[in-house]
Amino acid sequence: MVSAVEVEGSGTGALLLWHGFTQSRWSLVHLLAPALASTYARIAFLDNPGHGGLAPCPEPGAYFNAIEAVWPAADLFGYSMGGRLALWHLASYPATARRAVVISAHPGLASNGRQERIASDHRLAETIAAIPAVAGLGVATEPLLAFLREWNANPLFGSRRLEAADLAVRLRSEPRQLASSLERFGTGRQPELAPLIGRSPSQILYIAGELDAAYSQHGAQLSRLPNVTAITVAGAAHDVIAAAPERAVEAIVSFLADEGLT
Image 1 (cartoon, helix red, strand yellow):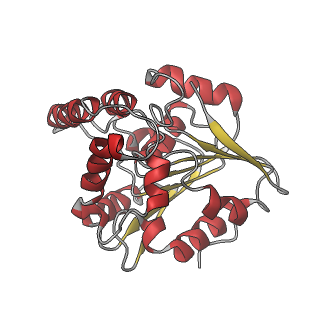
Image 2: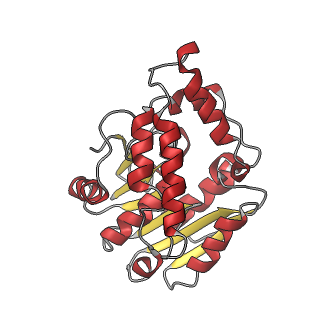
């Protein structure tokens, strides 16, 4: 149910990290493990539910219970879908984290628009589930490669392009499990988290790209909560980490190490 890459550090406590949709637990290791090793003793890069191809996608309650059973007190980080999971976990276990960083994460829909989003997530899930599942790179994986390229061409991601290494990491997931992840953990199924987040004792940093108007607005709205600080990164779209890795890492490390934001 839970798969992770664990890295030992020289600091104290634990940090859990979730990646974006179609990525895997390996996507952020090379960038964030060295930067955070002096802050934490344990750093766990998690596969999002339905990602990595290791196990069937669980139900949300079972998934977050399993996370809490293994890491009962840990700070949190997540990007995009992973940011939603971090906020969702925090809402489920409000005292689990001292600090949390989320990048380009939707805080959840109110009743207005929820059914439309559920239907949209379902249509995308059906498209993904129809993709043949074949491990590795090659001609036989072209339908999945085509979907990944099409997904990346979304204007939300700005000028980001997937290199061969990015595609190799994303091909670790099985299409039907990605589809199941959307059905069970998509934005349409996610609760409206802002009221729950505001009651948490955790301090939260919300990062959005300047060019990502919708998620910058989510950050502005969440910053009205007493425990949320929001910043925007100039010149970046949705994938702030890919667009401005140095600025993103600086903000993440400073906040989680309690050094203040620069």
